[in-house]
Length: 317
Length: 311
Image 1 (cartoon, rainbow over the protein chains, first blue to last red):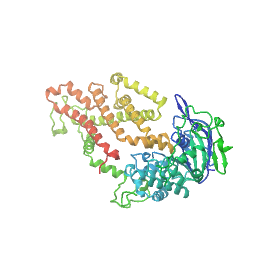
Image 2: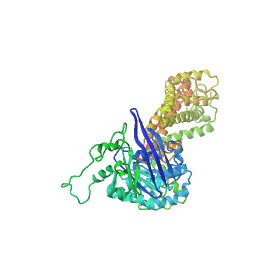
Image 3: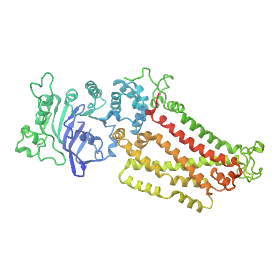
Image 4: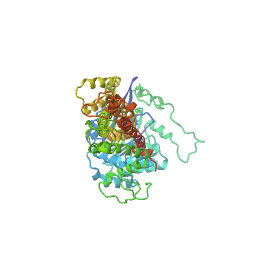
């Protein structure tokens, strides 16, 4: 088991009270697994990703544990996490294109980063050049300033740098969101290639784009309003989802070959609940076509089939 | 793929390992590249050459002088002449103006470098810490900064300078340094605040870099031209404050500075008597040093900020 998250609760502090962005999530990511994390905006995807690597100042640790390769991550300890960041757990941020210091050459920047983690830059250099070539970059980029690179080149550079020390877990946060579809595919394949070559042990891909996840992810985890809704293999999630939210989400996606002039594409009516005072019980209750009295109590996240977890009373029964 | 067809020369990280592959490559090593942009900039070259000339003058001048700066014995009020080594003429008391001038120039650089250096150092520590840490640390440091800012510095310097019996040039420089840092700290604090929220700083934090590394390797390079400008302004400021103090007679004892030369020339009515060689060189030197530093600073942005460079 590469990553184990147990009942993790992270709230945002606001003057009006706690915003329960992450309210008790439990899941695991196996060695070599690419896990997609999908859901609507504001459902806690990025909060989950960030809480595993660095709490920002508004985030408050409430409870739960995260274990990576058998070692508990001190995620509430900003300084204590430094030993894990970059070496064990790394991130490719959403803003990969502005993640490089504009006034420093990429080579110097990398050398600093490695030295800061007690690794000799000279020793890593051949590997660094090899990996740059692997993603289609001339190693000469090391002698350039970030502004001399195109957006796509910067993103690939960041991907190579983030995985240079072969971290156990790589979090890719919305990295395909601002790209055109062909580049999206290339980035997705690069991530899979990194996993296959052992540059990263396991991957967490955060996105709201289910189609890219279907192409690259082994498993997909669907989140809704700060809680987990469903986790299963990519194939299962797309072809036979069991949580009502996942079903409605999949049915909202347009399909190739269907003319929607004849058959109207249905969305999910309503909006997700606010997380400042989330409703009791199942948070999807208000929008759920199957909601019953039982749903006033929060459903547990249980394994209904092998490797298929669902949080819904209808399915658990 | 990379834009350059030829394999460019690798950066420092790489050049430690292997010699440059192609000397005529498009990308030069860090230092040569900086030098290339520095030498192309006329303002920088002008400012630098004036400053360096004055510095050279200050270093070798005292060895060339044939008389001590405070020695008497020359012809009184003599215009510049080649005779007896009184190249800049003599004062009304028969002292060698050239010897006084080069000694004063040396003191000018010492006061500027030391006073400006101390002020820049304190300003950087306070500004970076307050801006990066924020919160209570910022509140406390900002309060201290504001308190020092509202102290009537010049009056304080007057009192302290008048209180001391023996005044050295170093004491003067340290006093100036300790009182002129607040505006630098405030400006750096504001700059740091704006840089701390940038994406690459966030990325550095998520890569597990320490605060010190983030400040010096990520934040400081983005305002290196500003840091240098700050030092130049503080240097110039220290020179002017020192000249003012010296001019009103609170200069160092046992030696002579440019400000004291001007004070003595005014006391002896050199202007009215037409002894221009007595007060023109010191005034011109102060103006040249401070002015050329300012001009130099304007040209530095292009050298430090790769985004402003034009090929």
